[in-house]
Figure (spheres, rainbow, N blue to C red):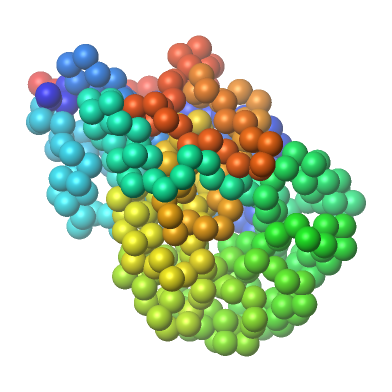
Length: 369
Ligand code: MG
């Protein structure tokens, strides 16, 4: 079965609400959807690289170019590879374009599942059928707005809340939420916005029984994370810093953190994410979110069903992100605050062609000669 064509679709999907982090404000999510075509089979993947750098240095424009000029010519016309074979062949480029690579790999998993009649969760080795859902709130305009938004999410049944923080917006929002919801698991994410000088306000957060504090310092600053973890009861969690299973192992062994946020997009795909899971099972592990469309969310839910992902995932109901999603299926919260892992073959979701047309900014198909 040869790979006949790769289609790249640049989509722009309006968010239900703007999302504000230490890096800036986002009103719509842009992403690249990948479609691989072989005889009688069409499969999908998603590349989460954003329009502008910020979370990492990978951008949508760079990923698009790499997929078009490098990946497509390399794999078109060849037999469709197994995900493991693809990863092995691309390993040396894992660090350069992890999100583009993850998008292609996702489509290969979809193909493998379609051909074998197996769900992604089954193929990855999932241990459960549902995943406890967490929800993330960006930086809000004022504490009243924060509390009101949190009340709505609490009532919806989310199993834990994460808020974005930055210097000057940390202790007060945490105190406000703790007072309003004394028993609701709560965690914070700084996206690297602190340094040693501003770290004292993080140490003060030890009083609030947080589940974890995520990525307080820059991605490459292992030393300051180690320094802070030694001074705090609350587990530190690394996100941007952890790119490989070796990183994960070293971070836990050296006391740099106790928790790890695993995102397939950041680390180069589902196999790389599973390798982190397998290498770091003694840590507090969970699956993070990149405001994925229904395609990427389906894949992340399958991953989050692996046994050592014990903390609630940053995977919420579709409506939380998008008034209209790209898939026919919409993810809804179960009464126990979980999301169901898709059970159909491959990703287990189907692209809504009408929605795709509405959200498409540009499209390019590369065919084999
Ligand atoms: Mg994060």
